[in-house]
Length: 231
Image (cartoon, rainbow, N blue to C red):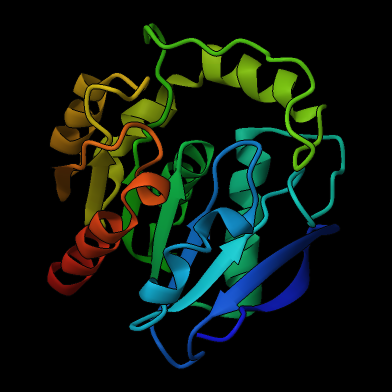
């Protein structure tokens, strides 16, 4: 497949850069990367997904080629994604998020499910009060990320809004939760709990650890495509 088409769009005064794969008339799929990464994190799987979707891989604010405005929160990134989808006029979106991107995807689904056909969360759930997983700042982070993002995200992750977890039960669209298995640092029983809580949740384990689409790309694509056919 040819190299992706790259473009930029402004949402709420923030420039967001994205890569597009596939035909624009195909059903839309938006990919949200993990912390410290950018749209290129999806380059192994995006061409395969583009066989049946128009795939948009976004650089979140503070990452990659998008603006680094210095102000960060889960809510701001959620609003960026909602604005991105609205600005492009997309409907019936398959929203896919990994790690940080998965948290953002959950919050989009909780607030604006009308934009979505389905949600796919890769080894990711909304943080909940009392969770055993806690994040710690790790220096300045990779060069693909604004170092100022770390403190804001860590603080929110460790002290989350309780409604983020409660909101799982209000997501009306089909949800696929891909769990990385016992070598992942994300508590797998919490992913299973989220799958049981979502009205149309489905749990699939792909034992690759936290980075499923990177380490087992064929299995990741197969799970996504099967879910898209059935959901």
